[in-house]
Amino acid sequence: MQYGGLIIKGIGGFYYVEAAEEIYECKAKGIFRRQKITPVAGDRVVISVRENGQNTIDEILERKNYLNRPPVANIDKLFIVSSVCEPNPNLFIIDRLTVIAQHSGIKPIVVFTKTDLKPCGDLLEIYKKAGIDCCAVSCVTGENTDFIKNELNGCISAFTGNTGVGKSSLLNAIEPSLELSTGEISTKLGRGRHTTRHAELYKINGGYVADTPGFSSLDFESGDVIMKDELAECFPEFREYLGTCRFTSCTHIADKGCEIVRAVNDGIIATSRHNSYKMLYDEVKNIKEWQL
Ligand code: ZN
Image (cartoon, rainbow, N blue to C red; front, side, top):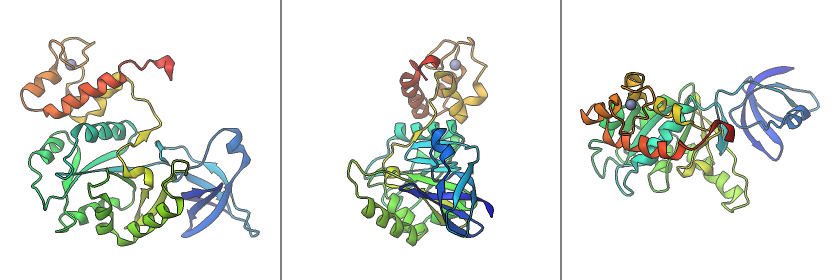
């Protein structure tokens, strides 16, 4: 029997595929190795289920996106978790992740935790103005944890957040069994340098959450390189100004006649967002097409 399914996890050459309400252990067909394609969690696949248990992955459907650290495919939403204090939020790191998400076709959602310790202040306003979904949560008072749980429905989501921002408490508040299972996985794999980081999808509220030790630090990496010409597009609040600057070669840094710089000076675009743009531009400006 052939089924369409979703890879939930892969360990030691075996892939666990959810199909027709069951989990099937499968091996990938040899053709993928010859094509140098490794199936990953999140891949939508076609499998053959056989009576002798020798199930195979026959086909991997085209990926909507691919994140390589840790390896996972087809993420719909990325929750970028930071705390309002202890530790203080790093807006550059948050913005960098929103850019990676936008560029990969993932919807970023910025989440500020620990609002019971300190009010969120202007932070939410920065992201609301940028047209990026954001919310403030407290795992102590339970504020907005239901909002996040509802957002999981029907999607594959990932959470990223540094140690101490309360990511684990948040996941635990949303679904106690999630934290339990991720804890088990981390212990089994260990945290050593040579252990393989792998992603696993957990079913929660009609959706899937990818979690892995790799997502516990803010070092999410996309398989795609962002070129300097694409960067401004990854800032949703810049888009309406693109093409309106005096010079078509405008880099939107401090150029004469730049409409984005004007919007920053007028207070329409947040200064912190433009600062992040300038720092990211510096990172990507020397990447040339031929280097890829
Ligand atoms: Zn400009």
